[in-house]
Amino acid sequence: MEVELLSLIKQKTQEKSALKISEKVIAGERITESEGLYLYEKADLGYLAMLANYIRKKRFGKETYFNKNFHIEPTNICIYNCKFCSYKRKKGEPDSWDYSKEEMLDIVRKYKDTDVTEVHIVGGVHPDHDLHFYGELIADIKKIMPDIHVKGFTAVELEFMIRKAHMPLEEGLKRLKEYGLDSIPGGGAEIFDAEIRKEVCDEKTTTDLWLKIHETAHHLGIPSNATILYGHIEKYEHRISHMAALRELQDKTNGFNAYIPLKFRKENNHLAYIGEVPLIEDLRNFAVSRIFLDNIPHLKAYWPMLGKQLTQLALSFGVDDIDGTIDDSTKIYSMAGVDEQHPTMTTEEIIRLIKQVDLEPVERDTVYNVIRKY
Image 1 (cartoon, rainbow, N blue to C red):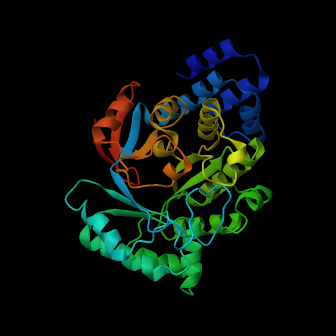
Image 2 (cartoon, rainbow, N blue to C red; image 1 turned 90 degrees about the vertical axis):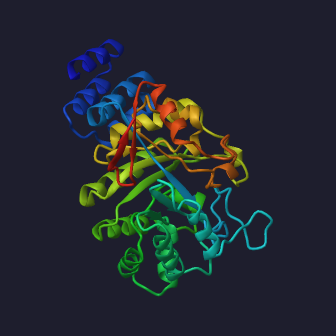
């Protein structure tokens, strides 16, 4: 496979930098930040697809992962004012919500006798809710569904709820684990560059603190995912430095399961004037992410954000995971104007989407244990 790939690449390009990067990837060597920047700025899209899919097939063959999950979004009331956010509301605004624990547990009860394996809990940073509010929610969820995996709370939510409970970070994460928290999603990373972060989410948890929260969680045996928000005012070098920070932390902890590039969506927020990057840029970003992040196993295309057709196309650019069934339980991207206004896919629809591009659907749990191959 390696010889054939290199031969194909040589037919496509005689560019020395591209050939050198190809040889490094095929040899299992890490590319540098400058080489990553070259891939963004100068590499042909077909070349990127070949190289990203070589990595994907070497690791996973044709296997393509999904899970059966649903979301709980406790509130969209938030203390922060991120410019890219279409989700945040103030108390009393028409589109705001603030579910009680019992209302959230009613959502869980709907899935009690199903084969759903994960509940994903994220929302706004509510000024009144601390660690114990959410910890008790987790404990009550486990009473209803003892085997459900609770993936909950971005680093931004965690920082506030732990601070509000007057606990040190490590102690707070330990307490949440005792309540039943199993893993952490990757949200709140946005973009790590300090200047860009100041422009788009100045009030939010700093880059250093985001990384510290995930590092501490990993050391406590709480795995997590990682994200980036791309396609706004950042440049390619900011994406590379963002991934470099994640790659460095993964070298230390090996605690990230998946990397999820999240596309900026323009509707109903203060950065709407920017517009959105085209589909080709989405595919380029997935491919470069797969090539650069050599130590984070899985690359996820989050289909409620991308839409089903683009998600299917992304499977040819290094992506090996498309998230889950969702069951119309998230509003974060529908409020930002994506086509999937009521995001839900049945298991059969996911299987069909994957098989249509000659790949093999694999149902997984949150930490990528295989449940069933189709």
